Image 1: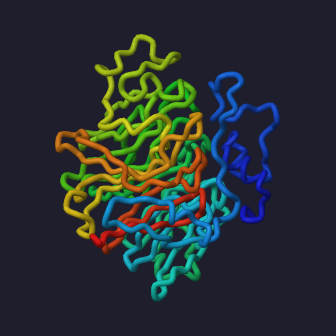
Image 2: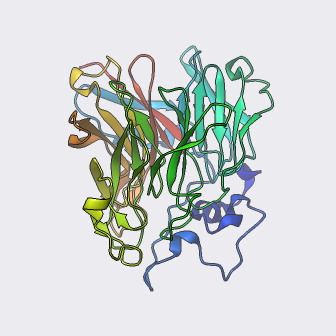
Image 3: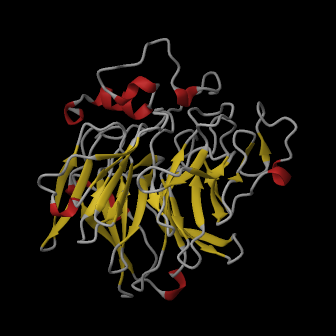
Length: 405
């Protein structure tokens, strides 16, 4: 259904204007204000960047304009993956890919003698951004629920019916899409973002929880989290780190997105909606708050409205030794800045004390003349140590490898 929608409908869906936008046949009422526009200054014409309603043909992908450090190579790994978002690797080498507003699908990409084959294994889903592969099963999270497809790699041509894992999620469209992971403790980690740009805190949103794989035993890991669409666990000690998208319309240059260190203690409060980027009190909700003293501080500021999404600790051996243990981070790129910020892959080095010693560019070239050629969403390490990067704007997956030549 969604593949055949008009470009206007695709734009409407991508803008996320209200809860009805998950389905093309349920447009918002003309008088309703889109959630992303709440707080927008009068006369401001900036709006979210719509994804294309069809994937960019392989020959038109911007790979020639993409830049990586010396010795690295970037190439198209798979094309025609409409709205490509989350990436997960199966035990048998299948790459599972989620989507969001445009496609509503889950894909499986298999390698047939060096040629990639893209299969749709689930479709007509409600914002199925969150996926995880664990012990042969694929977990899929929507704003409403989490389901599981058992023994999926043996059944790609005839996927099994999904098994319900958890059905108590709020179901909001605003920041309701998920990013899920199974942690080193064998529990499933699930965020629930703020159902707004800025709004009062409640007990259903603005948090990361973990639960048993059957959906039982839910417990809070972190609160005051506005919207995370990327997290990972430090391979050295199992600590949880996550990326966060800061609020909109405070200014063009503030607040920053951030990378945050939860650690093992859990139930840390990161301040939203009272404070932003650790130090800035919200003009509406921050009165009387001492941001630096009352709330957990970011490990790293990743830039204003950068759209900081997927992240992954690098554990491979293909890349030079200095990258081992570093964090690769996808910055989707800003939409509410006059000049685009982000739209790239950066790499950050933990300092061993819960902070970050430095961050530097790694993959650039997705922005040209203040226009997007692509927008990175997620990063994933392959078994050979190369990195895959999804691009929902162009519907493609890129591979970065290192040969030293």
